[in-house]
Length: 173
Image 1 (cartoon, one colour):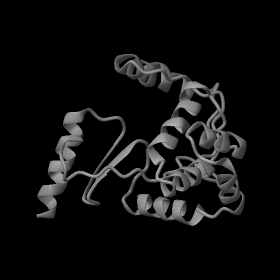
Image 2 (cartoon, one colour; image 1 turned 180 degrees about the vertical axis):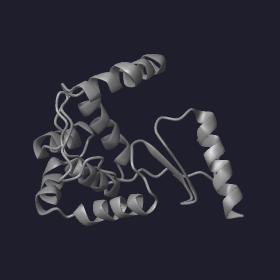
Image 3 (cartoon, rainbow, N blue to C red; image 1 turned 45 degrees about the vertical axis):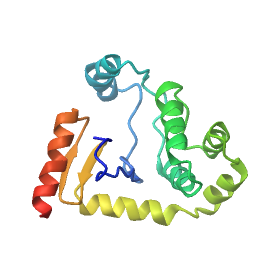
Image 4 (cartoon, rainbow, N blue to C red; image 1 turned 180 degrees about the horizontal axis):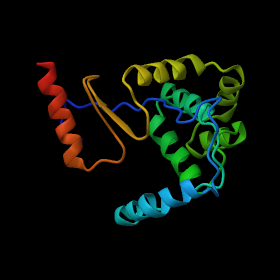
């Protein structure tokens, strides 16, 4: 798909369990079953390390930090660091100190990020993404939306993503 020059991949913020929705218990039956039945087998097939995080933080600040990194031209590096911190090391990505440390890990200055998080400078842009997701009926992660015309939720094989793009192109023209 990346070889198709007419496709632009844009990551958007989506908080799966925003306030007041309760977060899930990392030791609870639901997460344990989901990870053992789906996440761990998929990670093994893909050859990637994933561990069920011992914390289930709110993700709003992490999304704000990612928006900030996008403004610094370093979204991909920062986003990858966020995923490693959460899914490999089990860090609390809802904590400002973790997020600023990840900025440093990504070659960014942490003080400007800390100021942006403390003043909630990017909260409005994150909320805009969440409103757009709601308008598109996004209910889970990952979600794939093509040209605001067609959508898929959940981990998808490449063939399904190609069909999504084809369907959106057909609807658009």
